[in-house]
Image 1 (cartoon, rainbow, N blue to C red):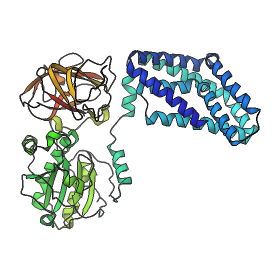
Image 2: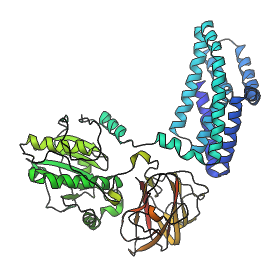
Image 3: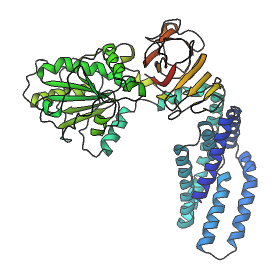
Image 4: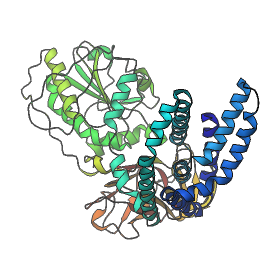
Length: 538
């Protein structure tokens, strides 16, 4: 019964989602469905009327089967027919799940909801069958409360219908449900990684107070080789043998990664503060995009970011693979004996990381003159994010990792195509306007003008851009909700929204000064050839 229920409902979910993607009218159809289902919750007679044909059909099949002698095959058939009967009889609650899935698209989350709903229904029936009259009596006593719960849900659904119709549904719930997940991700990585990592107790921006209690450090294995770098910057090549007797921090980063950029001021501050005490910081630049493999681009980024510590250009992922690393940024802390003692993946927990450095330096006998912690105030794209009000994820434009694309035209891979703006995009949906050639990694503008549109919710909006093959500066103009950004412009635009793409890098285009809310971002390129890679937020 549960399996049939999930399969039938899953097919309906997929078909419903296809209709919505094919035509924006489907959204309004789903809203009407929500309204009908809300009324069905409020009015049991309406729910009974809507399900009556399906009840008769299911009852007819069940009645036929009940006349035959029991067998495994017939029991399975009875379960299948019950599942077909139960799917429509489940009524408004199931309908809400299906309508929500139609709006959001089929996914593992939707499948789980359907299976959970089916398992609950099957369990209640099983209890009724095997526990007898006592369970039936208890269930009957709960019917009154259930009726009020159904009616309350019906009223809530109708309120939701009004909110969706007027576009009020994209703010409150998202702020409640989407927040920084770095702490959860860190715990999951620590739980399932084959090495026993030391745990951390929270974190945040650095301050100047004394360090707290010692952090438990464990031996996680010897430091892997640094061989394989295609070039070293700010230093001659370094080896594990040369680094024996030093405390080492390895920072995996890439210069278009916003999370890496925000961590770099702390890494630089640690280098400046502790290098005379025996600390060596090594930035391992492992590229995400093809343009980041160019050592000249990396060299320029060191000047722009004021990085003075040694950097290994790891364009072939040799060091990355030696460490079995999977994250940007990733910090590994190595003691004077060459053993990895601690790690941290992602932004944040800078206080704990610095305390680890201090402990490792003290282990090797260093006399620290200043036991306080660094104080860092990043500027521009390196400023700390407003992590409590970021509801837009990193979003790629190349077709290999594109998500939430909403222009009416399907992406034509590696071929020129004219695109038009998405119709009433919801939060985190984006689209192209004009003639673009979309490759696996980025989109290239064939003829000016051309636009990229994104409906977002965050304080800061960044876009990784490059000037294309000819390398000439490309002019652009940014708008937010149809007007110039004014005081909400980023460091790479002015108040009118004007700017230029001169290099391959991350451009900060929006930094809102007031309250964060859902906004529609638009960037229009006035010259052809620009390459757009990915949006990031903060």
